[in-house]
Image 1 (cartoon, helix red, strand yellow):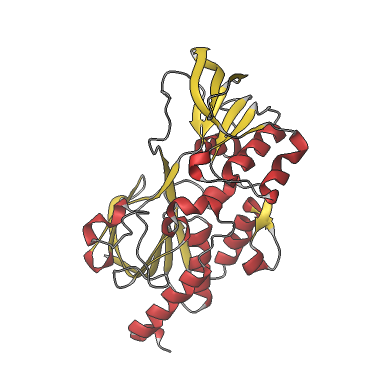
Image 2 (cartoon, rainbow, N blue to C red):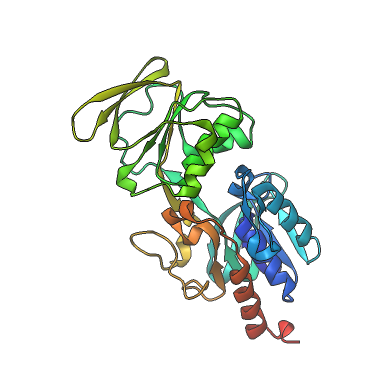
Length: 323
């Protein structure tokens, strides 16, 4: 069985920067495993500036940050496996994965960093059927369609917003030639746009609706309009739209560690950490997977400190790293 000193699960910016920092501190034989066919994760969708200040000393766009870190990874002993899905992590840090080239395989790691991120999930706060009409998408999927696949799930969307992520999407739709019909703020989420959030959409004069609840969708196959009711019951309005982009919940991707009983917070479902160390010796975590639903409100999520902790662990526990 092949053994690595450090295996990072997830090639988003957190996993990439964690691997880079560990490598800079002497860690050799690093493997990054990524299920997608590209690196960078969600940051590929962030075409606005505001990333990399801590590591680069300046702010750049998401894709620029990815490219810079990818170039830096070439200077350390690091391999990246794309289109590879980790099936599970079992005791003694045995990692099972699968890809088209190797089939199912197992490797062992002296240390593991979980940088698996979060997935969108409906949380039960949507009070209308979402499978009756075409044109319904989550905010995250809409980002992916537009920024990664070059497809438009709708050119005149109504967007529900529970974080800055929805405001970024609204801006992107306008830049690409669409026209956002309105942004509906989700009061249940407690989200209040900051001045910085509002600046993202200020040039486009997008209507922002507060104090309304989405009550009905209409259309012939595809969405054509949406009805919204004022929460004080005073009036109801109807908005023309050809799609609905929903802000939903984000939950950490931790299915691969079921067998080892990693301790998790019961409410947020994120790993319980001491620094960046999980409850299992030799396993660390960083990035969106440790923030859960809070991840959408965080500006810079890198793995630098986690990489430092992993490198220190290897030096403290393995003779080959004590030079």
